[in-house]
Image (cartoon, rainbow, N blue to C red; front, side, top):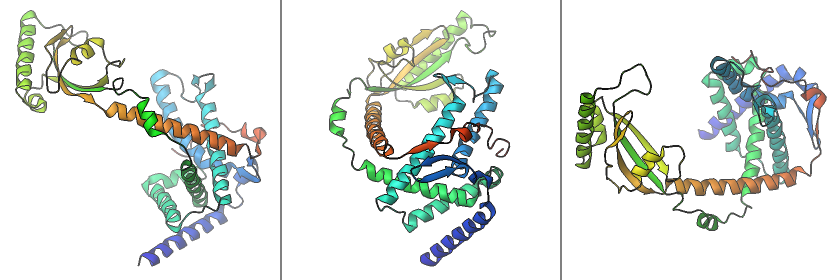
Length: 345
């Protein structure tokens, strides 16, 4: 049954692709090549899905930027380039990379298994089913274009994984170079009784009598937490209490110095003294004063960075073997943000 089901799935896939080919075989998107990678010419059809994904997100951000800031996302300048220019360069780099790596995969004898091919089709079907079919069709993206893109990316990724097996990653040495003390993380929660409002300056501060009541409340809360009462129980019983959690390392610039200084000496399960501020009284409850989560994250990030460094070095070596010619006369006429805009709302 599974074999028959698979065969029907592939036949449907191929028939859909053939029908799409008949409809798009004379597409204007294939009249001018945008870039030539080795012997392979790539046309707008080879770029259109990447462009669509970038424009779909970018145009939403552009609208949001105009509403919030009075200027657009695309033409915001960062590091001497507009985000539109950076997006365009990123699209070109991505398409060229997948082309090169898929060619390398084929040259090395790699190919997709039947299951990997089926996974690509399932991903395309899911994309269509989740309400994207009309938008894709309006953007000029046919099933055959999606099929080509997904299969190429899958083959490219397969070669990348094969390539990564050759990397030399000295994980133990990298771990030893990252200080556990430097990345020692403190996990805390804080209960807070406000005496003023930082959000609404028109709201008057509490009277001294009310401040005393607030202090008595936080003092009672402190005693209950120290006695083992669950914080959530206290919050459920008194909606006048405020709560937030904070996970930090000693040098974390994201939180005020006074909070960190009050928390650092605490043992696990211990509660700080009442800390008065202009806005209220709070106590800190130490949950874990020696969490390794931040250290593990730092190690993972270092290993990932080293893998990326080695991949970039190897990819650039491979890339040098290819003649890459960009048709700037055509490419420069295309404006990211306007190619599928109005078609993919």
